[in-house]
Length: 179
Image 1 (cartoon, helix red, strand yellow):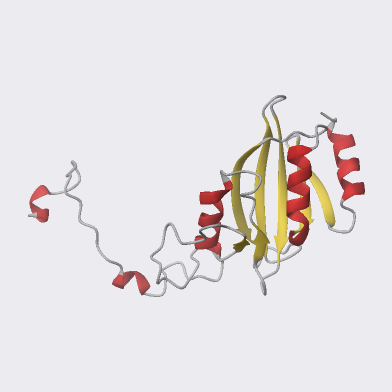
Image 2: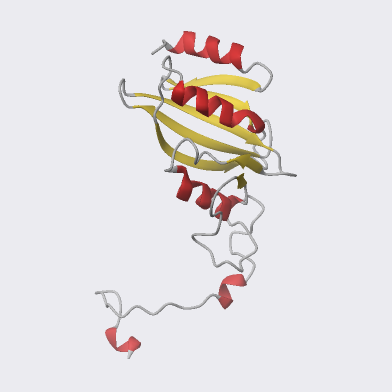
């Protein structure tokens, strides 16, 4: 695997049209790229033997509404090279007007539920995802609670959520309340 400084140069040259910047924090590189080219970068990082980041550890997102940044949203991919125990972060920047990226499922099956979570909580769509449905909020829920413009107390929509009664009590629940 290439050393960090060479890795940065190779990726900058290969993705110069969509490349934004490379940052480093605590010895870990973060590659910032325009969202439309993220699949090409992820494929290169996984399949090119100079990189070999063969494990997708996590996908999450950040809403930069008032923090500034290259766009409102960034989708963050945490990758691991399991052979050399090296990590890298890819930050794909997505515009607010069309928050959409290609799905990483063709590269890593583990992207499935992680992309669904980002969709549910941030409203970022993943094109080509086989089952992009909500996993935390009801299907009829029309908001995305981790967006910065979503009110902290909600909009009252939770008042209509179905209450799930548990039949197994705990030391914090009164068992008689379920009878």
